[in-house]
Image (cartoon, rainbow, N blue to C red):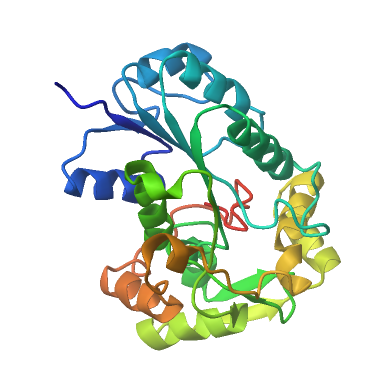
Length: 299
């Protein structure tokens, strides 16, 4: 009998791509959910959902911010015979004062978690801290290459988590039965200020990178001067707010609980990213704001 594939939405992203690779290394059938895959999957085009879900047994959901799409997607997945959902959510979803619950990302994760918990399927929720890979693959990379990271994060620290660990937990939840009904809070093994983080990158690369702490007002003014709409700049500043308010420095035990080992360190991430040439190329994008709450992650 042919084994049913596992669908990974966001299958070419920082976490989804790693999950696809891990499932493939296990010899498990995996379907990449992306606009460039076959069958094509596009969160905003519901006509693509059925083909992506056809014959699928389990789904890893990397949600799409901007519209509340997780709930109808989970409902359709259930109708088509999916039995297990693993959801990538974000740190602080249930923490008062962490983030604006009415923000785009906040509403996406709050509604998404509620949908998954009450869908009647097997489920696991993964809530990572800020992604370490934001510095090498995400919205902070160009600032690293430019040599200056300017954010309204003050002297707050964050317990950056390696996307390799996030993907490893997600895959475990997809293929093992012991994670059903669990909510895993994920972080790295220690908290670093942004100054600490860029100093680690500087030490590994020989590239001079410094962190400049701005007030939220200064940050928004700079972003607006660079052409960003004020509302987007304010959302960006708000997303960094939990670090400034020291709400991201705590350590979480989800990696240990799910995998039985310690999480990967930020220093190890930097060493491997530097060895792979992550900071040797020209900037690939403008200093775009994070596109989702991951939290947190901004994955």
